[in-house]
Length: 120
Image 1 (tube, helix red, strand yellow):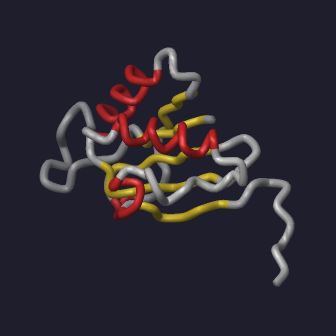
Image 2 (cartoon, helix red, strand yellow):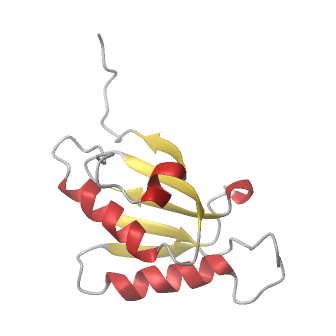
């Protein structure tokens, strides 16, 4: 399980703030992830600039999720989401138990590489 956090995300109220809010969120997730088994990587840009602070939860064998509208205080919520996704038997993060920022801030759910089309 890997959490990618955009370190270049800015604050609309103060776009010149340093360090950038995205960098502060990335640092917070990295600090809280120690000893959790969750890998955290900061990335230069997730190209979700209109949605504020952004992150991705990527599962090796399941779906990946893109979130926006996060705050610098959402580090623990990202790790909770990562644990939920890692434990999901079907590879889909359950809605129940998902922290509120990961409900309202979901941008996309991306299928695994080996996904084959579902047929009804």
